[in-house]
Amino acid sequence: MAKIITKTNLAPAVYEFVVDAPLVAHKCHPGQFVIIRTDEYSERIPLTIADFDREKGYITLIVQAVGNTTKHLCDTFNEGDDILDVVGPLGHPSEMGKFGTVVVVGGGIGVAPVYPIARAYHELGNKVISIIGARDKDLVIWQDKMAAISDELILTTDNGSAGRKGFVTDPLREMLEAGEKVDLVLAIGPVIMMKNVAATTKPFGVKTTASLNTIMVDGTGMCGGCRVMVGGENKFACVDGPEFDAHEVDFANLVMRQQMYKDQEALEYSCGGH
Ligand code: FES
Image (cartoon, rainbow, N blue to C red):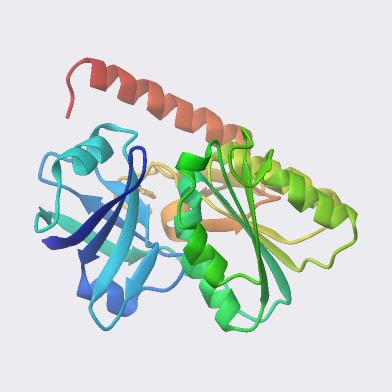
């Protein structure tokens, strides 16, 4: 059982939960995730650890109500309620080091998992340029938190309602075309965004990492739910990832698998599944 300490609405259908999970908080590192079950009937949902407080034993999870279980969690769980299981930390931590200039790209709620990684890059003395994007200004999250650990922050919105109009790849491409020295790019967000970031950096030969938030069931490499093709090989996001060389990820395959699950979930939802 993990008690919800605070619940905050960050954007339409997006909630921040601070959860009492001391065993996870003491061991976790940036880039790792947990798998939660809200109750005994719940699916397992992988959620990247967006922040942690080792002293208090708290972790922060950002949840977007998109499927049955995430909707159930966001709509009915409040401060003081218990989440049945929070299992983790899972996955490999992000590779850390002093790389030089790191551009971190967060799309939508992908900004949340980017945050602890960007903070750690910053603490290690890297120059951190953050590009965060959303469809609309109301969907921008954690801009202030990101600004606090970035040397430079660029905000984009698809409709121009905040920051510059366009996509996260626009300033990234301009930076690279202008010959700015970029040593590493990290992208977390919708699959299509990570695919486009990878396509933007590839011609410039800039090392690019994507953190893949796939469907997961057991989180132990047994079920195959999180299978992705990377460099022509089958990998499991839960045990081999979640971060991979973005230039090697078969994003088309990933989009196809995600669509397959979405169709199944829509069917289950229409049939009243929980
Ligand atoms: Fe089952 Fe990764 S979640 S193999």
